[in-house]
Length: 563
Image 1 (cartoon, rainbow, N blue to C red):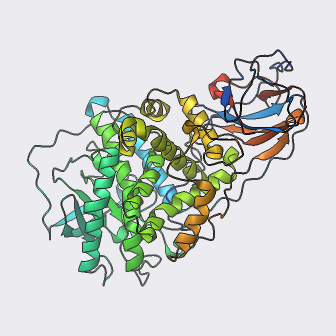
Image 2 (tube, rainbow, N blue to C red):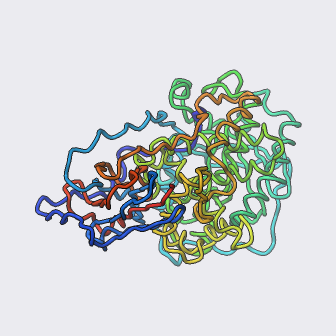
Image 3 (spheres, helix red, strand yellow):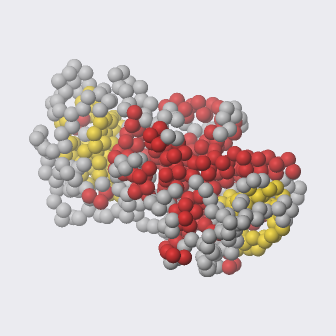
């Protein structure tokens, strides 16, 4: 798996918002046949039981038929509080729970993931310290002065992974020349870049993909970027300083930073500003001999940097729309990243039927989603603490992909959904609810949680409800399809599964006894089998001590009948 994938959590930051169960909290009463939370479903029907309203109980009817009834049961937290979590137990009596399934070993953290997370957090910290009336820079004058080809100027560029504009030593002065200028993009190349570097043909190709394809794709999907430097352009600065942010030894172990955007470039108030006062995307330069860090061929740079650009450009647009235009805080980290990962796939789709190029844009998201599907109970969706993990990023992408698939037809287009999410002062759960036409966040999460398993599930008599479906992807077959297609174009697809990796544990309904952790936004998956002729059964959904789950966790027991 490429090590450039974007971010990982800094372990010293942001403690989870979980609270321990009070030792004096009384246990919930056992469920009875007449308890609240009665569940009576036909095949394909579903419900969400709120245990805070039913004393933790869910009561299922007897099975008078001659065949087994099967339910998918998903204990989930619909909390909008990042990193909220609590241990849970699902069953009738406090019996010893079976050993929890281990999550697969996650890919090691990359420096790119750590660095990007640091930048996004820094933007939010700076926003909190800027007075609201002064957050937005002065309006740009009506007259726009485009960049001229051959223009030479200096920039302040991060020279360390601990980049901080309040610390001058973390920024270096770079002199660069505008070698290619398009309608929307001006490509500057560091005068100190190793030679020979990009040819005129390489630069023409980059200008074309940035200027006529990716710029248009992102602005249609998310809205416009700012123009505080009044040049009518986004600067792509390809600098040797980006390569040198990691050593060759670091690069070999934890990867490198392929490119980034930093909101401090759009802040004009010291000490939170870099001094560049402009819309800039930074990237590595080719360095085949590895004179700066690890080696980067021309071909690898021209293939990788556009994928990074379309991801980071969403961050630039989001920062403008939330912070500069509307004076609010930047988007919550988990949703901001979900939109940028969606931007990769969305940009890649513009190349179809060129499957080779689409693979380069989509493969990372498929890999990440497979990591999440393998053990969804282990990871947050609503998140800041684990935000850099690839599985978490898989959840973010899947959630935005689901929103686009579900609400695009209602709003008129896929772009209408993502524009709603970026062009607003709302953030996080409130933003999602607005984009979903006012649907409550817990309802959206419950539908998404069920859709992750049943979207393209094929069983006799079972038809997934339309609101529980992805439209663009059929994950039960698409992993193998993409694995084969991408391998044909030279991508290392060995880490991509051939089979759908979400495999719920099968549990006997009459003796169900499971436990685990609820992580904000995510859930655990179980297939409950209710034998032919078996009587009623109940499930008690409680904390690990048998008491009531916290209401702030917004616990839900999502149930859909499969057979």
